[in-house]
Length: 418
Image 1 (cartoon, rainbow, N blue to C red):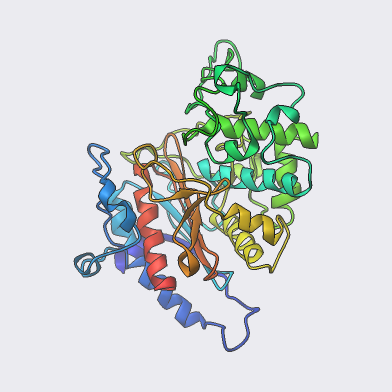
Image 2 (image 1 turned 135 degrees about the vertical axis):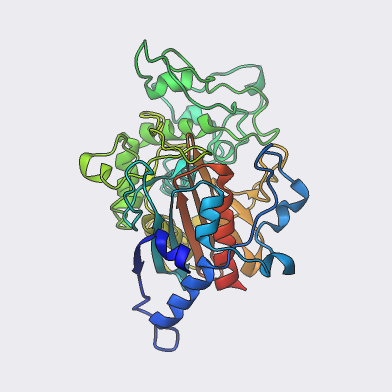
């Protein structure tokens, strides 16, 4: 434990004070769970760190461990060092409450500022899960049709028509499930020209240097992960609501759930900037953040694990019919319904596609997630088991394929679900 203690910065226990006496866990028992998680990581062997090759045959067992692995458990401190990860923040969920949250290591190796439960990380593609909830909220309100041509709702910009859209159209369902035929593209821009607007991004027009939001195969014919598809959803939400994407997120998610450290606005304001974790590359070197300022829905969220855990809990409670702060029970269950298979050669994780969320398992083992990884080195892994009321949010300030997140989530899964 000596190495582990050296990297722990701030620990916050959030006890489930509202439980009945028969269910309430003692502080001592929660501390024991924390120690078992911190000392119970097992090495993931699904990635070759040198080549980046993924062993597909092992993917279905990413949350499993054999006897040899369990007999050789590692500490969190050891795995952080192994993956050149300066800082980690964890929020663990049990009985639909945040049971504990804790920060480890540093926000930035250059400053040594410790990670706390208030440290803000980039949510990366986890942003898409929140974007999906916003879109489904408007479906629920009857303002957007899930299976209609999105151009029916768009005014100041329209999805381009081409040979691929003669019979099949781009719909919100297809955008949410990466089946709209839109390209896989990341974003850059010409700094000599200026900064692209969202419409510049959608058109792939200077100063934007990305592919345009134009179908490159027949919508609905296959799955292809598309960042720009979620920027079409962002524009759709703004058109229908007449409000900024940030304002809509505040009204539907952040304010009702008291997610006070969460925003889609970047750069952060001066007060929040004090808590911002810096990204680190695969060698553990501190880098400057690279966040897009106008294309937000695909990866523009900044938040804390504690805030994001509130979002996960609300979804799980809504799934069980215990809350409707964001979505009705019916809509949440549609959110958690399998829409299509995912080709692991294109997206190497053992998930199937829901309406803006990735799913695995069924029954009491049903789990949902949307991991995220932002260049040059920040990542996020939220996970929830709605039938069990358990979950976790892991955020790190390094890349390394997010493997450390998987190892931590696996340890939490063993502690609370097995």
